[in-house]
Image (cartoon, rainbow, N blue to C red; front, side):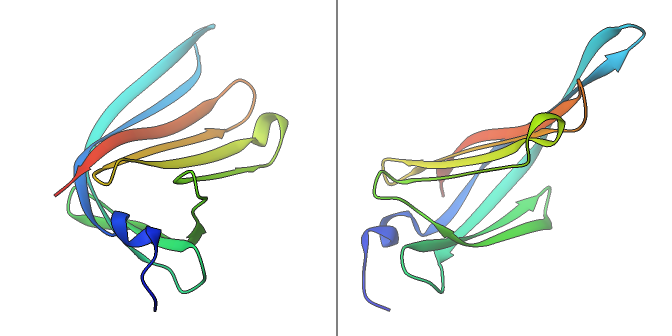
Length: 122
């Protein structure tokens, strides 16, 4: 596969991921927060201008997101659903050593959950 601007971001990133969920409890909105160690292995995808992401949390592989198209402004963005099922994923590379990740998901009215981190290349 020929070299490309995507090669600058291939590698392993690690740090702390922040999770949260907001839900009604006793007539008020409550938010729970927790953290996990995260390692993200980033490799070239099988299609043009794409990358593969393998997420490992607390030493357990959790999810792979493959062939995500990365724009020329170093980002990936996708949104799905609507209303109480709206979700979005935003990934951005900052310089050649920082990976920013933000996942948001509505889970009914008024519940929502998400995950975010900004981690560095090892």
